[in-house]
Length: 160
Length: 291
Image (cartoon, rainbow over all chains, first blue to last red; front, side, top):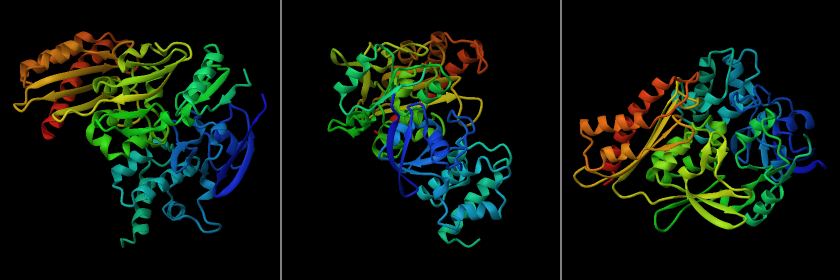
């Protein structure tokens, strides 16, 4: 069968690609569009390493078909920094060393950004539940959670 | 194995024709949180995937003039959870739906998918059953409506006929003195599959006496159960200790679970009684608080 010709908006830019029905959005991002920031951890929606936004909704790119994305607006980790300027979450993760191997980091950042846009003053419990679908095998999560809380405080303009 | 067609019909009739034409080898795509995993694991090999999300009816979540709700089969959990009206009226249904997977899964996972995936442990199902929800089914012979508890036939199997699919659900208006709740037991705090799940919906009169009740258990049999004996144990009572003991016993008696890594037969059976009591207490508190 002929491949699907899909047009979507990716990180603010009109983007076209061809895909087969079996290709997920994650396959498309990594293999067709060469955007390898989104990681494949489990490919079954358990680990969150492929977290992206589709039409302003946080999802796992491994559980969305590329063919579903016609007309959609997709934001991946590659769209998070503004040129050379890192997003406050990215900057804070560096400053507070909220990562070790880095495989989960793109997904954690995309998910954390989605949380802060919805709730700029989350409790630690809210952060932990929101990020429960982002597995990290290195950090033990504490540094990640602290960095998210600290970024939220900065973005609200709270002094420490 | 390759060359799966991908179709996105915009009308119910078009979807039914596609399902019929595929001779039973079509798969419906709503949120895809089960379908894509099965596809990847080669558990299924469909000739066509029918994405029903371009049919308006599958995506609406409407509070009707009579206070009931129409919930599209493909509405995502996160979309329902953000709605104040349905969350206030039927907290048990929303809590059960919200327990399915992570934030990311909630961005996609639908009631239609959770029901038709037909896992005995699907979290939303006991809550839907307890609330008295019905499914609006479209197929080659037109429309029909079935109670949610009559949809599943066993693990991975539904009673839908060839060419049929669930378009939406009806959720009744919340009775003014009614309440519902859902609880499940899992070995951790988040993101796991129910060892036992229990949903309850009930109404009270002004004296606090239970006037009607529906109790449903998940993960303790091949399909989700409606436990009439448990409801009868509390109807006409004010949930006195004897009534709660009878409810516990009725829940346990209804169980016919499997032994697996999540729990033994004995454990699941005992937990079913415990959850039954806890869920009924929460539902009664909610009913009492809202008179």
